[in-house]
Length: 291
Image (cartoon, rainbow, N blue to C red):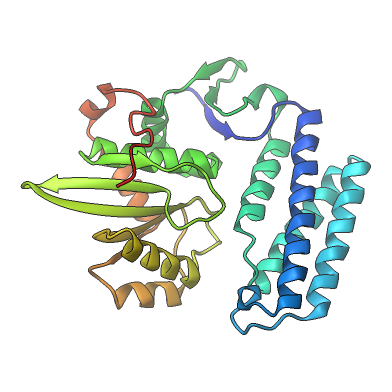
């Protein structure tokens, strides 16, 4: 059996372009800090649940952003990775909304960890032992995930959304993959019609590392989105698991919310029918008119 590795990278290709992505990340950090500072001055509750913001938090974010800029200028990979991770973790610890920064940071980290031959811009590939690159359809990716489910942690957040959309499509749903935005709250709309009875699912996908759990605020936000879209069920699908508070909240709304973690995801992938791999390719669930 070939020892293959799936690499799905959304960032740019060669080293100079990895640093271009790093510079874009640094710019996003600066914008985020400016927006946070403005919100703090306006006394907005979005800063954190208590509605208060400590100056020391802002100063630390500014300091970490300065160190990130220095690491980029000196092309110091170790320093960049250390400070960018610390900034994201510090912001999360202070209950600031930095989901978009975390995802960019994780993508750049994966780019540093693989060799040049493994980096393909917005493509899905496998790397064979002889370094030959093979293009993968989403069907082939799912086949490899059936054999080695842990490879799902190598996919980008956007590619994970595509895989979840494909799983629902193969299970007979009419699927719409939403365009990428920073708003969050819905990645996929899936419609079923069992026995002629329609049901609408709004799905949020979170490609997290195993130790990072989906929090209560994400589940609560999806609950509100489900209501706004008149959906039957709000579903969170993740490669990790959920916090106790998130699970408790979902249990209080068993007919409106469903949470599916890594074990459920693996079960879905393994149970896909072999025959389903002979159908159309990716993007059959391209955005459709608003429902």
